Image 1: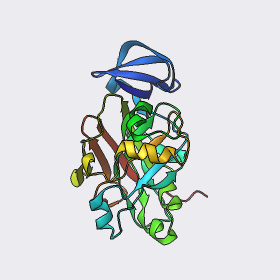
Image 2: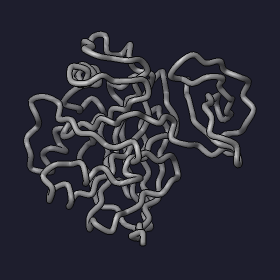
Image 3: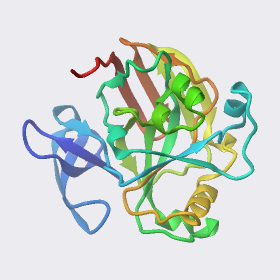
Image 4: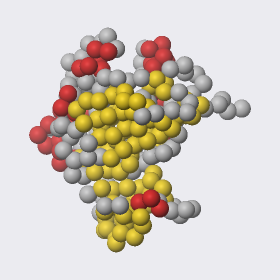
Length: 257
């Protein structure tokens, strides 16, 4: 099943479900009890929003061998965790705002895991029972600030630095999915999730040994090699096999006065 969050005109945002190219409303939410209503809206007639509003976003650094190699760093012996703030979340089509503090902002195409049940001290072989589904994410990073600070909060924490969408797919098998990232049609990243250092199940087991995961929390599973700069006017398009496409334009943000 595919879950969406959507808006029609000035109506409040609502959860729905997708059947072919039609959207139906949900009574309730995918994170609890819900009932599907009849499909009634063509997909192109609704505005897709971030499919979930997470309480926290857990990122994983250096989870692809080639990505670690291109940055000249070692692959970690255990998952390398960092956090992005929920204020970084945007949806399909929303602009990535390039902050004036940074001279080099980069795209990072990633598979995102959406947690469906409260999880603490979960074993790897039980991890899948706590997953609602999967979506596409872009772990946008101000690379110069990340390197300058020596820790990652500022470089990865700007508003709009976590596009997700277009929907949550509950039937996806994350073991071997092809990830592509294009900027203005130029291929930048291409790899399979089978190349991850730590699997989704291993990541959930490790994270839940540290912190409790709540329904709606998101895990960004790491990015393949090929990350590169984006500039104002660029269009970043990420596709993951079976999960659709996430597109976001890049726009220069001006300092607020």
